Amino acid sequence: MGIDKESDIAANLQIGPTSAGMVRIYIEADGGIELPLDFEPEEAEEIAEELRAAAEAVRAMGTSKPKPKRK
Image 1 (cartoon, rainbow, N blue to C red):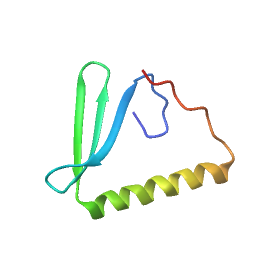
Image 2: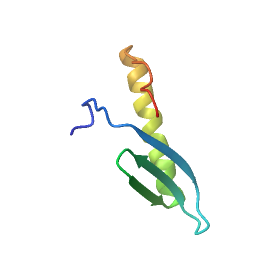
Image 3: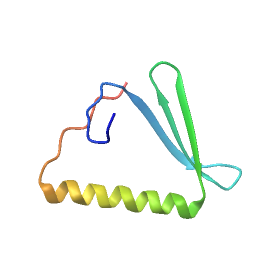
């Protein structure tokens, strides 16, 4: 699956600090999939910048789809 391909898979996303001083992105998807991703604070800031840049690119294209339904 590519980054620009739509999917019917639903997932929950949580982001927060860990007791070990990391930033965790926790993804829970249908079928019992749990994916904890831990990042150093600097890496988390880089990810945040990439998210902002992608959002700005979508706004510049003038195309925005409705938010997907979450379970």
